[in-house]
Amino acid sequence: MWGLSRLAEERARMPALRISGRVSLRSLSGALRDERESISLRGLGMTREHLTPDQRRAVETLDRSLLVTAGPGAGKTRVLVERVLRILESGLASMEEIVAITFTNKAANEMKTKIRLALRELARRAPSRRWQEAKRQLETAAISTIHGFCARLLRAYPVEAQVDPEFIILDEFRSRVLLMRAVEEVIEENLEAEDAVIGRLVIGYSRRGLIEAIADLYMMVRTLGMSLEQVIALTERERRTSAEYRAAVERLGKIVERLEVFPKPTERMAAQIADFVRAYRLYGPLLRLEPRIEDAPVLEECLRALRDARVEKRGRMSELAAEVDACLEEIELTFYDAGAGEVIAALGHLLQQVDERYMALKREMIGLDYEDLQWKARELLRTHATIADSLRREIKFLLVDEFQDTNALQKEIIDLLRGGGDRPQLFIVGDAKQSIYNFRGAAVEVFLRAQREL
Image (cartoon, rainbow, N blue to C red):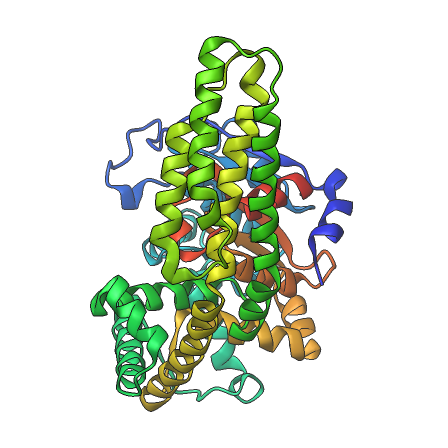
């Protein structure tokens, strides 16, 4: 697999470029201002005199993989379009051998439109079968969102992917409606069964609030690219225990002992120490009770009183005061972790029920949501090496726009397409400062790591 460690080995021959500045798209003769006509061509080639040196390199460097960082107004779409045209001009690949992935349908349509206009102009100025064939292939070219590409892949191999070839794609609105229905049905069934934990959650969140929270949690888990079982197991493994909570409370007691013997405190320090010790003597016994989530209000009252009475981070007291703050924070975190075991178990069971119901509802519609498309495409590439090998032979150039909005699951699909070799050549465009899809699980660190390694 083309993993991050493998990418690191390629760093020397895969330079990162930075596109900066705003590029004017007007031709010297005064081209139409309509955005659809913004690409101008001269003779058989593109008009590239307005490109910066890095933009020119991004367009013309075709013998290696590249990562381009580009901010707003840097002409990213133009660079992508002109790179595609340059590939076609060079004869290194046909339109059918190029895959371009962006993360909105609007961007994909815009890119396709601009390539179409450019090819039309090339064909007009220098009639050639090459441009006519490129225009024909463009209509079915793989220029789409990641979801569109995955759907295309699944339809090409429905048997191997174990999908109905006539599946419909559930957009975000329809899939959300279906998921909310699944969550609501599952919660209602649990309430009818008098599940005590779910009942407490409904009281805490409200019925509608809990439905929204469970739906959001479910979608967040799916974007991680891990199964529910894996996430639940990981959560349980990393959850802090009652023993760790008791240890944190014990550390606070040790800090109080050190405060009581603090050498030569000023009058102000002595008063603050006395106030904190007094609060600890009053609330400490409550902290030493076994952590239970229903006792959270008691914990919050204890912590509020101790924080109100804590010593200031000044002078010789700074270090001890910082230890007090850190210890109170640790007590709070471990309390909720240790006390929420029953709730976490209930949530895990609830999510599994939701998953089963949601999948059943989608099967009734022969529908796949965006996450299904990605999961199934990844599984297809993982388990069918011959298909992955075939795709690597068919695809010579892979262009990925807005890479900063890529999550780990999508990055893995790209890695699987490459398979650890240099086919297809990879061209990434993105800007970590612009990530807009954090709510979908897009991880800026995915882009930053790729930037370091390419």
